Length: 157
Picture 1: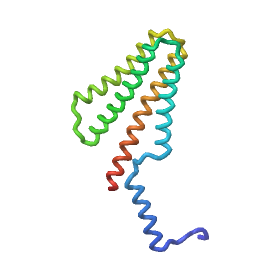
Picture 2: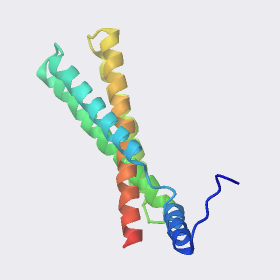
Picture 3: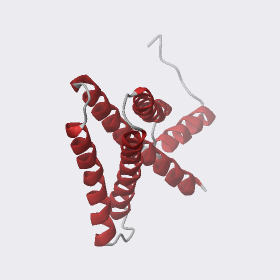
Picture 4: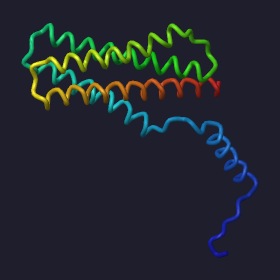
Protein backbone atom coordinates (compact mmCIF):
# COMPACT_ATOMS: atom_id res chain seq x y z
CA UNK A 1 0.00 0.00 0.00
CA UNK A 2 2.93 2.33 0.64
CA UNK A 3 4.14 2.15 -2.95
CA UNK A 4 0.76 2.62 -4.50
CA UNK A 5 0.33 5.78 -6.58
CA UNK A 6 -2.83 7.44 -7.69
CA UNK A 7 -3.22 9.20 -11.00
CA UNK A 8 -5.50 12.10 -11.63
CA UNK A 9 -7.85 11.94 -14.62
CA UNK A 10 -5.45 13.91 -16.87
CA UNK A 11 -2.58 11.52 -16.20
CA UNK A 12 -4.87 8.53 -16.78
CA UNK A 13 -5.90 10.04 -20.13
CA UNK A 14 -2.23 10.45 -21.18
CA UNK A 15 -1.47 6.86 -20.20
CA UNK A 16 -4.47 5.52 -22.11
CA UNK A 17 -3.46 7.54 -25.20
CA UNK A 18 0.07 6.12 -25.03
CA UNK A 19 -1.31 2.60 -24.64
CA UNK A 20 -3.65 3.13 -27.60
CA UNK A 21 -0.74 4.36 -29.75
CA UNK A 22 1.21 1.21 -28.89
CA UNK A 23 -1.82 -0.96 -29.58
CA UNK A 24 -2.41 0.79 -32.90
CA UNK A 25 1.01 -0.20 -34.26
CA UNK A 26 1.96 -3.51 -32.66
CA UNK A 27 3.92 -4.60 -35.76
CA UNK A 28 6.05 -1.48 -36.07
CA UNK A 29 9.69 -2.52 -36.46
CA UNK A 30 11.89 -1.41 -33.60
CA UNK A 31 14.85 0.89 -34.21
CA UNK A 32 17.13 -1.95 -33.07
CA UNK A 33 15.74 -4.32 -35.71
CA UNK A 34 15.94 -1.65 -38.40
CA UNK A 35 19.56 -0.92 -37.49
CA UNK A 36 20.46 -4.60 -37.33
CA UNK A 37 18.90 -5.20 -40.74
CA UNK A 38 20.80 -2.36 -42.39
CA UNK A 39 24.01 -3.38 -40.64
CA UNK A 40 23.65 -6.98 -41.80
CA UNK A 41 22.99 -5.84 -45.37
CA UNK A 42 26.02 -3.55 -45.41
CA UNK A 43 28.27 -6.10 -43.73
CA UNK A 44 27.24 -8.86 -46.13
CA UNK A 45 27.59 -6.72 -49.26
CA UNK A 46 30.84 -5.07 -48.23
CA UNK A 47 32.40 -8.38 -47.15
CA UNK A 48 31.40 -10.01 -50.45
CA UNK A 49 32.75 -7.08 -52.48
CA UNK A 50 35.99 -6.82 -50.48
CA UNK A 51 36.48 -10.54 -51.01
CA UNK A 52 36.00 -10.07 -54.74
CA UNK A 53 38.33 -7.07 -54.82
CA UNK A 54 41.12 -9.04 -53.15
CA UNK A 55 40.50 -12.30 -55.00
CA UNK A 56 43.13 -13.56 -57.38
CA UNK A 57 40.68 -14.24 -60.20
CA UNK A 58 40.19 -12.74 -63.63
CA UNK A 59 38.15 -9.55 -63.93
CA UNK A 60 35.41 -11.31 -65.91
CA UNK A 61 35.02 -13.85 -63.08
CA UNK A 62 34.80 -11.04 -60.53
CA UNK A 63 32.12 -9.45 -62.71
CA UNK A 64 30.19 -12.71 -62.77
CA UNK A 65 30.12 -12.96 -58.97
CA UNK A 66 29.27 -9.27 -58.55
CA UNK A 67 26.41 -9.57 -61.04
CA UNK A 68 25.07 -12.61 -59.17
CA UNK A 69 25.04 -10.55 -55.96
CA UNK A 70 23.06 -7.73 -57.59
CA UNK A 71 20.75 -10.21 -59.32
CA UNK A 72 20.11 -12.03 -56.05
CA UNK A 73 19.44 -8.85 -54.08
CA UNK A 74 16.94 -7.60 -56.64
CA UNK A 75 15.27 -11.01 -56.85
CA UNK A 76 14.67 -11.46 -53.13
CA UNK A 77 13.29 -7.92 -52.79
CA UNK A 78 10.94 -8.74 -55.65
CA UNK A 79 9.84 -11.96 -53.92
CA UNK A 80 9.28 -10.10 -50.65
CA UNK A 81 7.18 -7.48 -52.43
CA UNK A 82 5.10 -10.06 -54.30
CA UNK A 83 4.46 -12.14 -51.16
CA UNK A 84 3.55 -9.07 -49.13
CA UNK A 85 1.30 -7.69 -51.86
CA UNK A 86 -0.62 -10.97 -51.96
CA UNK A 87 -0.95 -10.97 -48.16
CA UNK A 88 -2.42 -7.47 -48.28
CA UNK A 89 -4.82 -8.30 -51.10
CA UNK A 90 -2.94 -6.29 -53.73
CA UNK A 91 -3.20 -8.09 -57.08
CA UNK A 92 -0.01 -9.83 -58.20
CA UNK A 93 -0.01 -11.86 -61.37
CA UNK A 94 1.04 -15.48 -61.15
CA UNK A 95 3.67 -14.90 -63.83
CA UNK A 96 5.36 -12.11 -61.83
CA UNK A 97 5.18 -14.15 -58.65
CA UNK A 98 6.67 -17.17 -60.40
CA UNK A 99 9.41 -15.16 -62.11
CA UNK A 100 10.37 -13.59 -58.78
CA UNK A 101 10.83 -16.99 -57.19
CA UNK A 102 12.56 -18.40 -60.27
CA UNK A 103 15.11 -15.58 -60.40
CA UNK A 104 15.82 -15.92 -56.69
CA UNK A 105 16.46 -19.64 -57.03
CA UNK A 106 18.46 -19.03 -60.23
CA UNK A 107 20.76 -16.55 -58.48
CA UNK A 108 21.47 -19.02 -55.68
CA UNK A 109 22.00 -21.85 -58.17
CA UNK A 110 24.34 -19.70 -60.31
CA UNK A 111 26.42 -18.86 -57.23
CA UNK A 112 26.61 -22.52 -56.23
CA UNK A 113 27.63 -23.62 -59.74
CA UNK A 114 30.18 -20.81 -59.99
CA UNK A 115 31.72 -21.62 -56.62
CA UNK A 116 31.66 -25.36 -57.29
CA UNK A 117 33.75 -24.87 -60.43
CA UNK A 118 35.97 -22.08 -59.09
CA UNK A 119 39.60 -22.66 -58.27
CA UNK A 120 39.25 -21.27 -54.77
CA UNK A 121 40.02 -22.59 -51.33
CA UNK A 122 37.05 -24.21 -49.61
CA UNK A 123 37.16 -21.48 -46.96
CA UNK A 124 36.85 -18.80 -49.68
CA UNK A 125 33.90 -20.59 -51.21
CA UNK A 126 32.23 -20.72 -47.81
CA UNK A 127 32.97 -17.04 -47.26
CA UNK A 128 31.26 -16.06 -50.53
CA UNK A 129 28.31 -18.33 -49.82
CA UNK A 130 27.76 -16.99 -46.32
CA UNK A 131 28.18 -13.32 -47.24
CA UNK A 132 25.79 -13.86 -50.16
CA UNK A 133 23.21 -15.52 -47.90
CA UNK A 134 23.57 -12.77 -45.28
CA UNK A 135 23.06 -10.10 -47.94
CA UNK A 136 19.95 -11.77 -49.34
CA UNK A 137 18.35 -12.28 -45.94
CA UNK A 138 19.18 -8.75 -44.82
CA UNK A 139 17.77 -7.21 -47.99
CA UNK A 140 14.44 -8.94 -47.31
CA UNK A 141 14.46 -7.57 -43.76
CA UNK A 142 15.33 -4.03 -44.93
CA UNK A 143 12.56 -4.17 -47.55
CA UNK A 144 10.07 -5.41 -44.96
CA UNK A 145 11.02 -2.66 -42.51
CA UNK A 146 10.81 0.00 -45.21
CA UNK A 147 7.40 -1.19 -46.28
CA UNK A 148 6.10 -1.49 -42.70
CA UNK A 149 7.23 2.03 -41.82
CA UNK A 150 5.70 3.44 -45.00
CA UNK A 151 2.40 1.69 -44.27
CA UNK A 152 2.37 3.03 -40.71
CA UNK A 153 2.98 6.58 -41.96
CA UNK A 154 0.06 6.17 -44.36
CA UNK A 155 -2.16 4.99 -41.49
CA UNK A 156 -1.24 7.95 -39.29
CA UNK A 157 -1.85 10.50 -42.07
